Length: 462
Image 1 (tube, rainbow, N blue to C red):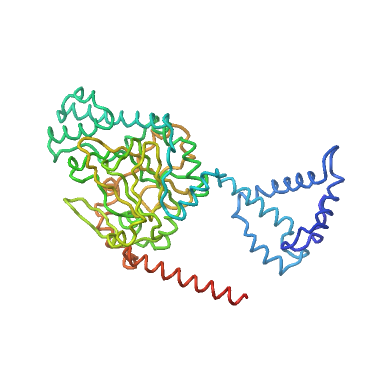
Image 2: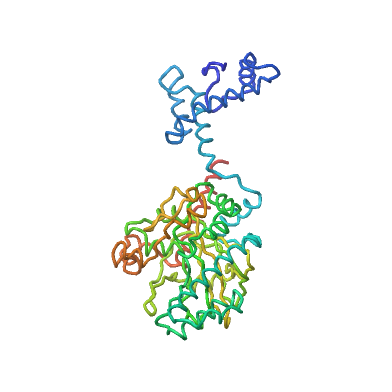
């Protein structure tokens, strides 16, 4: 029912008004009673796209530019694919892959604009009270389980001692009592909770949240999402109790992935591709005033992997951004202190400089969730693959899934020198990295050169 392909003309100008009328007139004789010719054209094109969609689903996406170049060299009588079929195949392939691209809300598009420009954004009142109550209930159950386990071992006072305390005070009181009863050397309460979060209630209360998946899908431009193998619920007790063990200095999350986990031959370009595939989410379960030790971030970050200093204190290894003090002094307006309310969500990228401020309160715990989401088609660059959200159909699937291993568990799986500072010193590309100040200066020089080239191009055109 369509005109011959040779009558449509080249792809680059294949829809002139006359040709449009010709196509419609050819469809007129195929119209049913009361059906407009243009509706027939739409219907028959849709049938053609459907016919080619099965072929496109089994092959790589059609490169429109490659077929366009071929069409200039070959005529329709030759071996090249008929152009109408080429266009249909290209559109069908786009439709097949477009199902993985979510439709963004207007509010999410604004969030995405700020996130891409600054690397950091705070979304107020993202989670409602029902969701927060469900998450809080899961965390309360985790704390109670640890309390009963320690009490059975005789390393804690009877759990009834803490029944009158509210949620924000209970864990700090347990921590203090446990250190006083068992001694600091036998302190068994975790810094953060990962395996404990593998419950059906936690999945229903947080991971299954459709609003969260919509936002992350919009930011990453895909519906195929993976829960990155770094996720945790944090209970940050006062630094006077933990002696600063829960407080982390300035770092990039990409630094820990590169130095401690990624293969030794990982390149900087691979890190850039990896970093753009992840969104970090940080949820305040309770209000986080300044004395509870909120997170502090730098917006407008250097969008590159930065050199890290290898620190070690009392047997604990950590990373710190090189030249960060000079960088913060030069960019004081870029510092964002996330003193937020419960239900607020902080999102930031893998290259954002951030740290945790100390918890200076006498007896309160800062509760938060730190979960990261990644495009499913990108590598994690770690010894674990994470979890495809499409494969987690219910809370039972999440409860049965084994938790992603931590560094000490990976060393048991592979060898004792896997990860950490020993691994960091062997990376091939580590010598290419620069500190925060030097990297920022290189970026500014690059921007100036790019602006000059653009001005010269515009001058030549005029």
